Length: 285
Length: 223
Image (tube, rainbow over all chains, first blue to last red; front, side, top):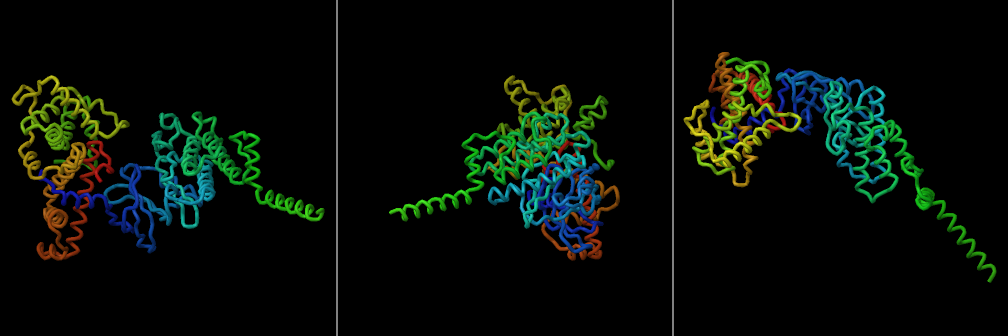
């Protein structure tokens, strides 16, 4: 066994890292990311002359990930165009290349981030309605497109969950999932709550939002929101300045919320009253 | 040498009840790890070459006799980290007892080329900025790639594809050259050069992944 110089090792690493797509219609352009189960490359679909995202799985074993994504036709879930095997035996699938940024890098006002979050809830609720639990929801697995659309990526854990294997990401994974117990749609609700907490942590504390996060991330699954749509509705209430169900507000909080919601009207009425008083004072001088 | 389509996990096989299977698995693990272990011992504990060789022998021999690797649990981390932790525990105990394994004892002697490892360490010393743990990882990666390269060489010889290996070696390992220069040198068309190179790269990738799987490694650990 001869010694491999650093130069030779770097060259061989590069060869191994760039998948051999011989016999397929794809030409690798560059690597754009790596998850726990495989790497994602920007590639050219030479048959159609367009750029796509090519996910190459580390293992040669069958996975349902591509089939799951193909079955979930929704604006919030990345469409899969094709799937197959590379010459080295590894599985790949081609999907839409999303022109955007991960949610973790989406810097916008809180209200805009919450609207994106609502779209994520809609996509997750759709998957749940088809019996699919994502299992690894986190900001890095969500892309925000150029038009503010949200796309949920990486359904690899959902595929594994079907076979009884459990993974997830620390900080976002539900306690029952981390403990290896059976996960269900409520495990995703926990992860959505963790994402919401991440979104709101960059802002001054807001009692209602904190309460929504706390309910979504309750330790016991039965104490969480019953569905992603319920969570979505709760966030909509918050955005509309309505009371949220997760929090019973005090009189002062209620007054503050009503003022925030109707402050234009309140200011207009106050201005009208002040003018009216000034006019009366002026007339009675 | 046989070239299985997928090498079975040597880590799993090392826990087998079948003695032959266990021994073969153990040899595969020693192949992949002895050099990183030797160099790690030299760097981390500042041992001289003889002591490092003794510790390396002793560690693998003890691991085989005492079934160290049976305790490995994949859910708790990589096998590479597990092995390194076992090694650290072994050396700490040996140093404490001051009774390390001596060469020439009645235990199994592994035939390992320490002189080569020592020469490599002398000619390519690790950077002072690199921790022993990082160095261990890098040497493990180097060792796997070198083993896969040996596998490719043997595969090419077995299948009568020496020129494929030559082209791969010249284009991907030596100083940069062009397809046309290789075509001229081997007196073959450029398309044949690229085809042979593509075949070798594909086989190399497969062999490397086989080696990696045999030691329960993940691809992300290589890059």
